[in-house]
Image (tube, rainbow, N blue to C red; front, side, top):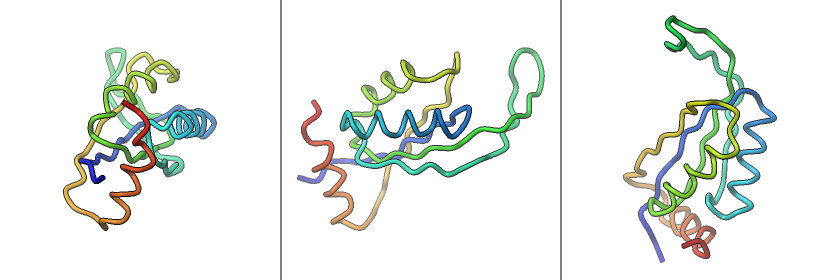
Length: 109
C-alpha cells in the first residue's frame, strides 16, 4: 500500500489559522497528520520592501499524488494573497509510518 510521500510546509498568520488549516486538511483526508510548530519570525520581500512578521509554521504529511488537491484546498482556506505552500519529498523513513500515511489518505483520489 506504500505510496510516495511528501511533507507539506505552510506558513499561517497565527495559531488559529494554522489549526483551522490542519484540522480541515486532516479531516478531509488530504493529509494523514499535521504538526503546528509554533511561532516563527519571517523576514520576506513584499509590497516593495523587506517585511518582518510573526507567523506559525505547519507541516503536513501526505501522498505525493494528493499535493495539488491539498494545495488548492489550503489556498481556499488561507488568509494570505500568496501563501507559502511547498512540498518536500520524503526520501526515506520508518516504513510502518510511511504505510500509515498511505492508509490514512487512501480514500482520497
